[in-house]
Image 1 (tube, rainbow, N blue to C red):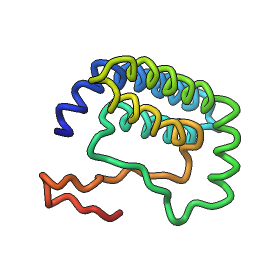
Image 2 (cartoon, rainbow, N blue to C red; image 1 turned 30 degrees about the vertical axis):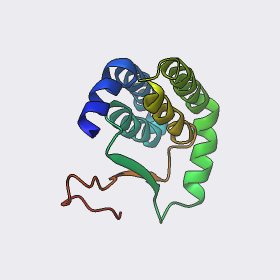
Image 3 (tube, one colour; image 1 turned 45 degrees about the vertical axis):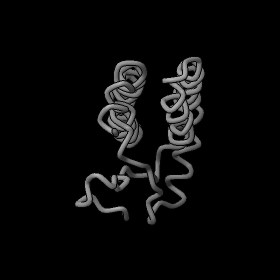
Image 4 (cartoon, helix red, strand yellow; image 1 turned 45 degrees about the horizontal axis):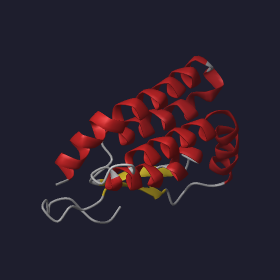
Amino acid sequence: MTVVLNLIWLVFAGFWMAIAYAVAALICFLLIVTIPFGIAAWRNASYALWPFGRKLVRKPGAGVGSALGNVLWFLFAGWWLALGHVVTGVLLCLTIIGIPLGIASFKMVPVALFPLGREIVPSGDPWFPSVSRTA
């Protein structure tokens, strides 16, 4: 089921949101000082392409540096990426089949706002028992 949801997501929302994250990443890579932000944006681009079957968790070692970086990210890129997820979520929720995808888009808003100090892990799909449920 996750493959079907991911394919539908890819066509209707994932591709466009991944492009937005990739643009943010490229801008961050061009400004040498913001390379850590570019890495986080690139990681979020991969998550925006194929979100089902994976989840975001907080890194246990993230500290003050991540918090300060998240404030800067929010000011320069986070708010417009989050706005993209909200608009995408609303548009997807206009159809019955798009409601689960819209909810997934809304769940991506916090990581669009504050991406530093998080990592992507498998969610532990019951169809694939070899994937661990813990991080």
